[in-house]
Length: 285
Image (tube, rainbow, N blue to C red; front, top):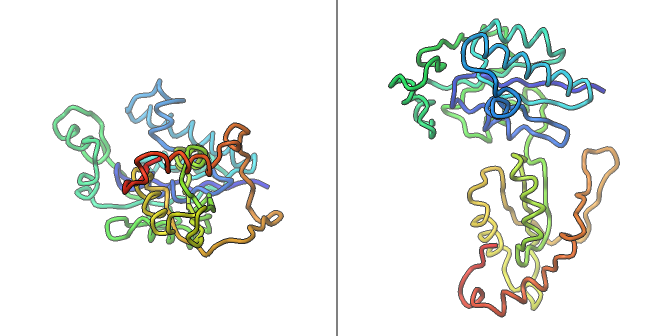
């Protein structure tokens, strides 16, 4: 079975990478323009020819991954229609999504200050300032998503509904999290730091000696710890008795290294109980 490619394109800071990260499923690879330029394509500049070569290589990778059964979500500016046509010729099954936002909105979102540098002449050939962005014909794209007046969740839902892409979250972790210790962090971080969408489901256990924190307290702790990860969400679920794993339904068990599996939540909690952290203070790890 072959995979498909969804190609998100638009002005810098229109929201391409943000949306792409929300469309990553268990069998999906995210190709991002910035990442490829920092790795595979460090030899390329920002002339029109180099930009086209950057996209030609990315399209080739996408087609290779599709041929091996992987879906691809790509996020590249892709400013010229000729470049989009090259991608169509290279990738057998590709759907283009125009991520659209007014230039002034993109400039407001630009935390790196690239637009300002371009206006001041410090960056040459910057799309939207001194390099063109060719607006696509309506019949040349599968979907146009306007991010100015849509939340990230709404935009991802629109793409998923239209194109049938698997939406977030792609990883669900269910547990008591009493407390959230280094073993938990290692497993969750392995997904979160790679841009995966993560849902931490907190079992609403009854208070007792082994469960000294309410579900809401644990939720607030996790939100504090993962406040810098926009792709991590915490929610409270009823106490879980059984988690069933179905055959060929897209779910899999996480393989945990032996040294991580041996970390004891009980021992960790006892260490905290012996410290000052449980004397009115929240623990942060």
